[in-house]
Image (cartoon, rainbow, N blue to C red; front, side, top):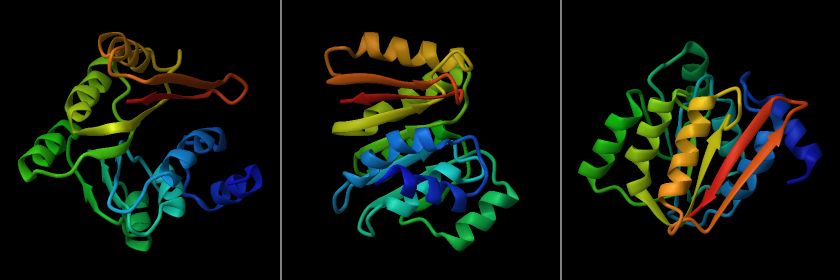
Length: 185
C-alpha cells in the first residue's frame, strides 16, 4: 500500500491516536495473513486501528478484538463495519482464558494497544503469548518514553524469550510522537 493510499485510509478512519506511521507498520503484517489465519487486537478505543486493519484484511481472515470499554463511537463503527470474527467487551486476560477454554486457533498477528501500565502490558503479553502461532507477529503500540510501562514489559519479554524471538524491531517517529514495537516469533 502506498503512502498516499494510507493517508486516504486515515482520512476515512474514526478518530484515534493511531497514526499513518503506525499504519505503515501494521498494514504489511495484516496483508501477509492467509486464509483461516487470525488477527487479534487488544485495546480498540474508538476503532481507528481496527478500521485500518479491517480495510486491508482479506475476507477469509478471522478478525477478533478486545476492549473493556464500549464507547458510542466504537459501537457505531462495529455496526457499520462488522468484524470477520468477534468483539469481546471484557478484560483481555478474561478473553485469553475463554480463548483457551474454547480451544481457539493460534493467532498470527497480535496488536496490543490496551492498558499502557507495566502491569497491564505484561498481563496482555503473559495472557496472549501462549496463543501465538509459530512465525506469528506481536505488535505493541506506544512502545516509547510516553509509555514506560509498555517499554519495560516489552523489553522484559524480549530478554526472557530471546531464544524464541526471530526478530525485534522498534519503529519510532519523534516528530509525530508515535512508535510501534514488532516482534517476529
